[in-house]
Image 1: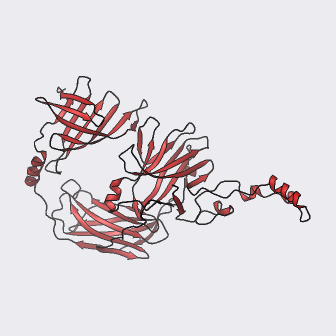
Image 2: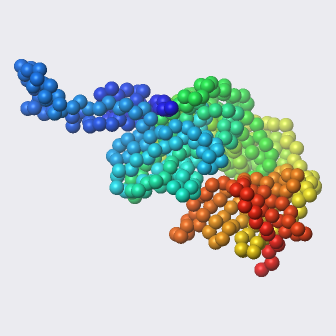
Image 3: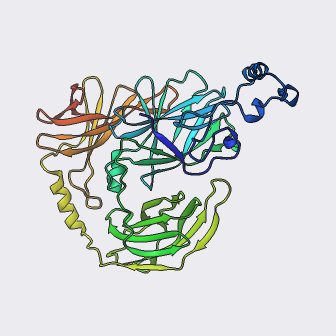
Length: 452
């Protein structure tokens, strides 16, 4: 089923010069421009011409074609980007993905970046995913589109975890803007308009937006709310949760130039880039804040910038100092966390590096410590041969460790290509060995590696 695409920002006049172009049409149309299609005055039929002559002239000079493909996101200068709809990405971890068909007729390679994505009204960090013909994946911040013989599949991976974080169960609409670089011409990079892609299979209902909390700024359509805090015993210390709404028609950036915890200054990390009409959640962390205990008071100053995407952002406003006070958060002592970490280790004690007869490797690391504890947190990683690597978090179960590992392939040029995730299960094997079973059913038997 085709996905309905509507523009979030009006198209530029050049694209709207086609017959039938309006604010509901996609970002590009097909066919010749009106200037190219219009016949010169010397060729225009006179009013006295017969119907037959006029018909013959019409055959020689066809009218420009109207856009009939609402799935086209962008089309200009030999580049065409088209939505192929939403689907589950079975090649990765079965989360939702927006498929893209990219046509490159420039004769040069393309580099394409995301310049903003939002889901159901919330700004989100979605990955750009390239699925190679051999099944390997590249997941990250850009597409590398070859100049010719392109057999890749492209998409924007949204992931179930993003929906979970927003408390949503489906994609109703998705907004995106892309930056396109042709060859090495970075100075003339093109940023597409933000477009809205609607999911026709969704219910159309978006949960209401919760703006509860301590309002730190509310002016000219921009609202910033502190929605609580959490304390982490790691290096970063406290985390403060922010909510912001951009009710303007501008792209804005919110920065925190000054902040303090319990009266002590600490640099905050948590800039927010928000498209017009969108909302965003951000977890703000602080430098060298592990010593802040217990956390009771947070003070912040905010700067709001207009961010056009080119040049330096323009400062719109600076807030006054805003202070939020919380009930002191209980901080676990090192003795408590050490005891909990040991309990989390459970019955599984085998840790270290293991090898099998083919020199494949497996390493098990218990991640829960007095400084950074969480239940059953182990990490497993290893390699098969000289160029295939895997790794991921695994959890203690009734009969071993299990989880899903990411994979990567070392290319001849020294770069890595991401492969398909694999399910792994690790069990005891003999007196001190371990057995690795993959989701494919393959088994590998490892023994402790000799110390080097």
